[in-house]
Image 1 (cartoon, helix red, strand yellow):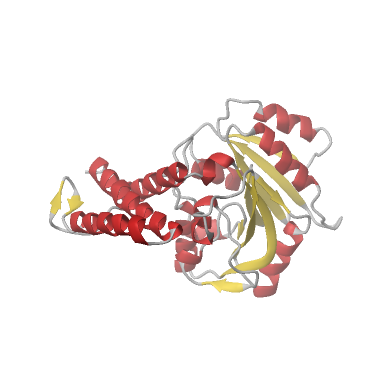
Image 2 (image 1 turned 180 degrees about the vertical axis):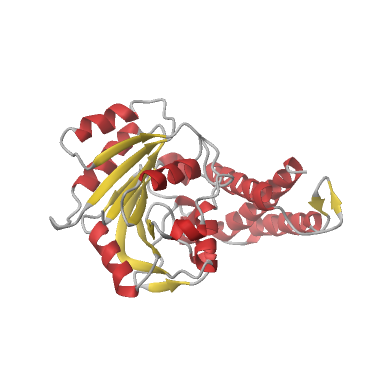
Length: 303
């Protein structure tokens, strides 16, 4: 089989309907062998019924239940179940464009690449506030900064899971997603995509960004609030600290001593920012404080 599209889902049955409807409209030639695998990550709503109702008219759609809570667990289960040579990942709140599958596969072929990511446009449920400029789009898994093709050469350029593809053979050498990372239920931890692409590149594989491989990502109203951003940054930094740790010999409660003056400087910069700087820069400085707070709690928990 040429490709498997994996959609991991958790308690978003109604949104999943829209994603499946978009995937059903993918424009692929009759010779293209592909499937969609929905991985239900222990949802408590009517997700299974939604998939089964869609399966009646769409035999290439499969349903898999993964009881271990966490996005990385769900993705790894999808990889194990997938029959395709290329695995495309998207989410249950994403609407791929009709040419997404073919553009992605063609791009991998054109550049001889082993993995790729693509453009992610926002669908705003409510207009974003003025402080929410493009510098914060990464928190929302939105990527609109470039529309060209270019090589991915570092983990900082890693795509988001709403639009990425990896050849299945890559996982044999690079390994699966780190189950200590990634969102688990309502915990907003992230970082599993970047860590995966870090291993992919370290293993000698080639990755590219495809500007014409496009999807549209729903951004709910609750996600364009400062409260959401604070939680996302805190929980993600906590998760990174717990899974990776931090260098340093002199420690207090497992926290390197140099972290405390860094936190103090970040707080002072935040206070100055709220007094004298534009709203997006002021909030960005606040987010850095929450990064340090999450880091500290994660290190303390891992002591």
